[in-house]
Length: 191
Ligand code: AMP
Image 1 (cartoon, rainbow, N blue to C red):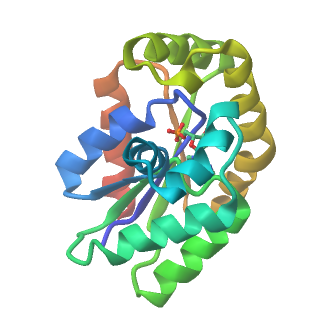
Image 2 (cartoon, helix red, strand yellow):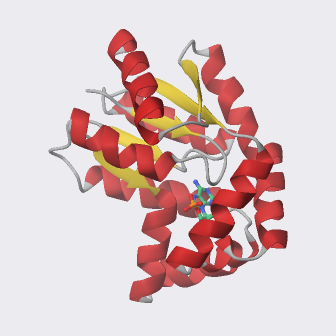
């Protein structure tokens, strides 16, 4: 079973590359941001609990995120593997994910980290905000806060997987196809 953590700051291209990787390797997409947006659209309690954090570009509390992820994994029993997109975003989330996956006998195979500089990210997010209407992609101040949160809380997650020898870095600037080819080369060499 191939379980990939696709890592990188907001706007790095995780969603775009996830779609292509899913098609190639028959994986299940697990994007916590997408799951929250679905809950909000459906007006669930979980959506209500998450919305105020998302509106400010802050992280939803770990226990809420972890519960939602476990639920999704348990309810996808036939999966051939997962691609985790936007999760884990804190070391506590990474530890909880590891414990849960080890218990299931389906550990995380590798982390693939897309690197993109902040000015390029800001440009991409503002463009995405115009197209998608995502409120958290339209305000430069909120976007800057997401970068700061990413630096403070999420970058340590890369260290966590480096220590396990599972970390691989890919330059996230270039054509979608080029980046995809680099990702598949790393996956095929390490799966
Ligand atoms: P994304 O679509 O991944 O950019 O996530 C959008 C927003 O959802 C983030 O800014 C957070 O408020 C929230 N979110 C998504 N994933 C997580 C996570 N793993 N931990 C905490 N908050 C999250």
